[in-house]
Length: 159
View 1: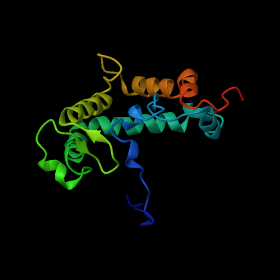
View 2 (view 1 turned 90 degrees about the vertical axis):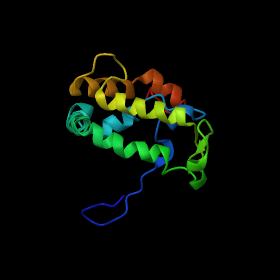
View 3 (view 1 turned 45 degrees about the vertical axis):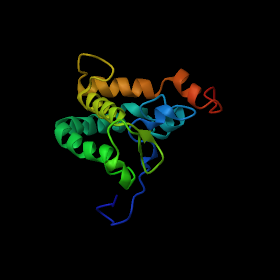
């Protein structure tokens, strides 16, 4: 990715995209990392200030552009991150991503369905969350002390 203002290159770590974090030896159990240290660094308002508002604006943009995003993600998941020979593999054969993750075509469809549910606000509920409700749920999950402790045994949550 390129920074449009400076022209500099921005590193994007695609190693845990498409829910790969769920299958790590210590699975990523939170939607994103929001530890107490990160919240403290946000200042007096914590995640209730600029962070929450930015999340809401971003989620609204993502939802408003659901179809466009899905049309970009589908070919990426099916073709681009995989070895060149993967597109020649018969259905049901595993696809190996450039980072070594193995997907079958069925798994790829499940990942796309999960992404679509996240964008629509229906991943954690049959009834779609409002933008504000979904951001609230994501922050709640991302700051859950029990889950964070399970992921980071030595993070010293008591400090």
